[in-house]
Length: 72
Image 1: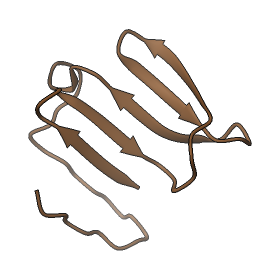
Image 2: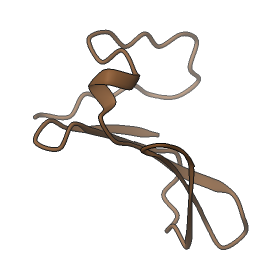
Image 3: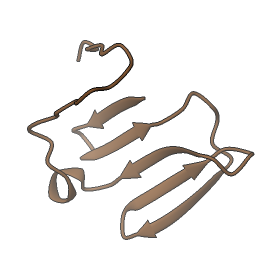
Image 4: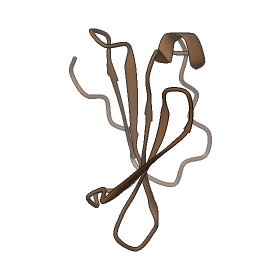
């Protein structure tokens, strides 16, 4: 899973899987869910993210995988 914030557009993309998206559905204003060919959720796109989610703090709790930081 990857979280990618784009400050120039104030958008946050949460990449849940490394499979391509073939369908997108807007579930509320500026929130789009992306699905793969099998109907599985693979990503979440949030426009105007700074007004919709808390971006100043990220807490990870008991995740089974490796946590990596990417350079900005």
